[in-house]
Length: 66
Image 1: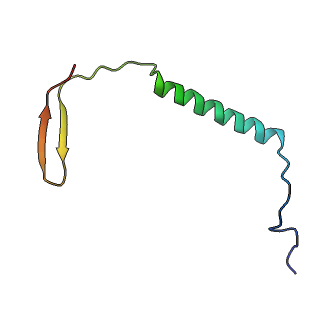
Image 2: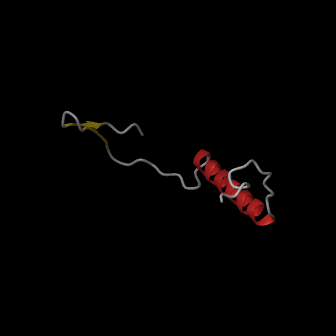
């Protein structure tokens, strides 16, 4: 006989471990987002940027903008 409670709408009680885990994930995402906005290490592009067109097989060298 199938369980009548299975698949029915029930209220979900969140425990503290799930909340703490979720908050840690949100904090990690926020740190990652801030790092994307303000990179911790500044990189300088050196050399030429290569643009490759895979469909036509053409390779162009663009002058460095810096």
